[in-house]
Image (cartoon, rainbow over all chains, first blue to last red):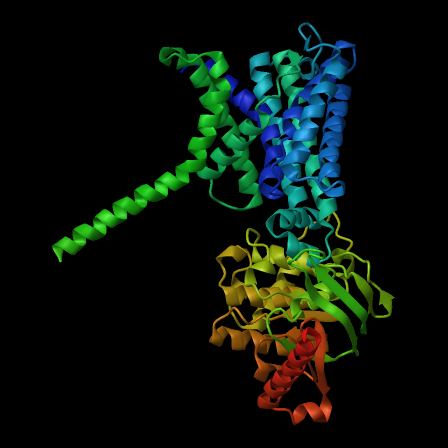
Length: 309
Length: 263
């Protein structure tokens, strides 16, 4: 495995790690399977590409991308809390309508950012001694850690704990005076804001925004969360968010290895989504299989001891 | 303190499963009163508590707590008046959060902000509160609630429900699903807290002996109505036998009424 592959896996793992943290908020903390992230990831990319392409500052682009994501999350929350749609349907509706919104924003299905000034170029000019290959992972690491620390803090505040309790035991937290509509709105906005931020950074990193780039975002996010959780078992918030980021890096590395060496086994780039689903299935069933194996070993042990007796 | 005026609640109205859970409940409870509620399954005891707490809204009628009309107020708005303990120990706590985090959730009933939920002062406060329970929970502050036994979880729930000195404490057969030993302990903790904080309390129970022994007033419910309401001297002289007979008698009268109507 080449070093460039490792670096790319880490870079991408960090960028998508922000998205995975967003998915963690809805899927794990709020217990709300939010499919709207498939739309809010390209939304962040589309807003960013549009603004940068028209000569706007990358920071302005990132700001509006986050605002766009917050609004997308707010819409899903509106469908669910006000119109009483199920959580799945609310997400699907937002995801679907965002496809059209993203096309409207970009005006076409793809905007290239080659030769445009991105946030990476901005930062590069501050540290002229670093090469782009060194700077990119450092910048992304900095941003992910910043997001993670802020998120850790937020989830430890009184409001943050109320949001966690909403996903854990809604009836209980209602009886303790928390309006769970509000906590769901906050969680969904925050989640989609992070996903859009991730989309914005990815567009600047990869040099384009495409209307179809969000397909499978939720699966990648879930894979990161689940892989992370199967590696780090500690239920403490600080460890949970760490595990999500590590899970994201492992997921990207696995996908890249599959893409790079998969042709030996007849894989094509189009098989990527299939591979990611297989990864999720493996990560989800891993504890189950491990438990079965353990149980088998144990029963073998006990049967052998019985024989000895 | 608490006032219910002709409260009606019907489930699945207009279908063949229609159930009249509450039919014209009138109830007045004074400050500091301790009321025990008994009745057979489906009598409307739990619905009564759900209506008071706002988990369900009544079809008709009026509910006032502390002279405030709360009939149409949502559950989370009434939470500042009410502490509640459910029958199922799993219902009153957040399993994937730690003991101290659960306690943080209970110290405020409104106005939660962006302050960190935990600090050393609060931890110390929680430790003292938990020590009073004498269940050893004070040494497990950062342990997940999912790892606790049913009795420990229920004790924690009681602590959380009464943390904010509620105006009204609702206990819904809160010891029924525990084994006898720990059930007694939980009941003792409850009585202690109720007495110490002088809480107005409504306790639903299946245990008739407990219903007569604890509290100051006993209500018997049947088919969505209050059929017996005794307190003071009258209550002191009542035996379980009498209650059962009274219940059977009322039931019988009703059957006769039914028969007359059907004849």
